[in-house]
Amino acid sequence: MGKIIFYEDRNFQGRSYDCMSDCSDISSYLSRVGSIRVDSGCFMVYERNSFMGNQFFLRRGEYHDMQCMMSMGMMFDTIRSCRMIPSYRGSYRMRIYERDNFGGQMYELMDDCDNIMERFRMSDCQSCHVMDGHWLMFEQAHYRGRMVYFRPGEYKSFRDMGYSNMRFMSMRRITDMC
Image 1 (cartoon, rainbow, N blue to C red):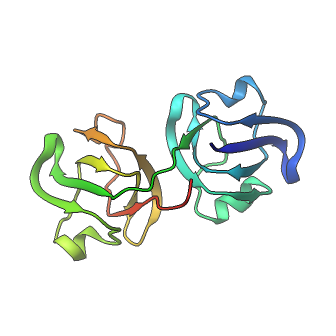
Image 2 (image 1 turned 135 degrees about the horizontal axis):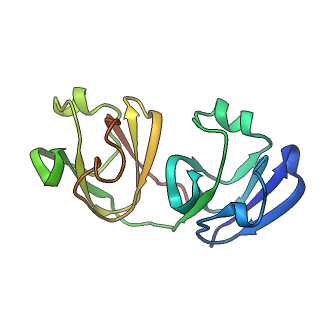
């Protein structure tokens, strides 16, 4: 079970909201998020309500202000929703595809890939099938740039999911003890 606490002000001040599951609209509890404490588990935080917009991965720890999180690579300054990442201890397996609807080149991953271009000579990834585990995909090589969380399931078209201007170039398993 995970627990994340959102505070309206920096340095864990002001009103707070304790969350132990997914929350599609943090703004119904707080007017803004100024700092975050993750007591247990791992969470994705989202720029917009209903788990939309840019995403950022948070593990157990204290995030005393938004600037702190932005210096860690978060590319937005407003948090409106969050999703708890369940604990997972099994194997990891994901198939990535060059084109929508599982078309083009296909490669299967069971471990992290810091650069699909170097490893597979694959210049783009437009769909995937996550068979096992929870994964983060990044728009740049070496786990940089915007990230997106993928849980087990079929993702036929990143474009249809709202990622039409984003190319995924690296993938990482979420192996933290969430």
